[in-house]
Length: 498
Ligand SMILES: [Mn+2]
Image (cartoon, rainbow, N blue to C red):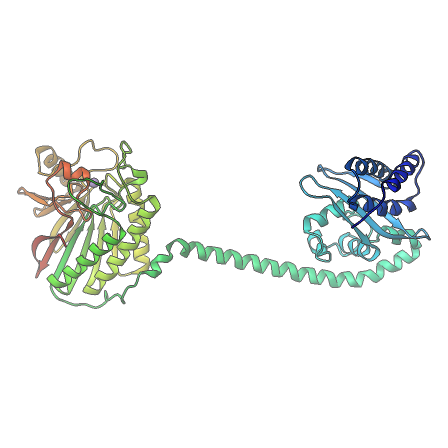
């Protein structure tokens, strides 16, 4: 334990008070510095007494050293400690910092020489950062403050103050020439460091770019898929069109609903896998599988439909809906690929629930699927209706209600206004053939109306009943509707309750 008697401190205070009216000699400050350490470290003194001593000490110090004002809030006191012959031994500093303890320390002659020799233009002209590596006991920020406290700038001469004090002009010139060789070596070292840093930065950037491309989609790699056989031609003369509609990822039926429907990722995976099994059992190996994606892929952002005019129960947040949809669709497509020679996907841009989120999810799925399986043809329609031909039949896909403008959904049974709307569009597009199949989702129901020009089919929802559909429309089970072709002849059906 450090002890300095109260009496001794009072004597010191008296002496300091006298000194403050005199011009202090620089030699004495080191004595006062060690006394100050004793006072501050002693554990038996009153705080008032310590404070009185410190105030006097600091005012003495200001006189003997110099107080420098810098651009920041920091204040610093620097001083030199001399030996009996008056030669500088140490450079001491106290740097007051706003939010951290005072930085106190000293540099010996060698250290100060190093700083001047390496940092200044006339010296090696290295950066503060590189010079600071010679002083590992200080952080870079601390080192910068020390330079500032001693007013050491690039434009200073390369010699520390004690060298200038102690050497003649001629000696200094000789010294300068000797230093030069060393400086050249330092500079080479520095250039190597800069090159290494450049390389590190370049590699780090590349690393980041690569991570960006894989990071969020790492689960794609997790999807186990047998080698895609799409190049093989089975030639079975059998094709299948699946109408995959209203998946509503994230939808939840309230407890106490009319019919129970527990909808989550596990159940989605189970149903999609069962569809693959049923296809194998029913049709075996196929030439082509077409998947019509009919909208409401996601249940909707922020517990709302696309029009955002009412809330509904959900069990997944926005990101979860997206991730589950992508993950499960990749799994589904991967499994199907084992039972056919060719896969073509047609997708409407959105449903009235998913809205723009549907669009983004299906575009993401298109991008990832075609990256992973370059042989799959994936077409996302940009407009409400999408049209294509397959096996001499014409298909028109739409969800049944858009995300923004339609006041009422397209009906369950074809009425005059829906018929006019469809005929107008077919005429405008120049689709004059008969055998046009208008396929829609939205109502989670399976039914078929026909007229001479086209038939109008509502297809099942994979999700099945929502609270809304079970209370407003004839109740159908969850499932998937399909068109099956054998030797080009078409028959239609559904898989339900699997
Ligand atoms: Mn819908």
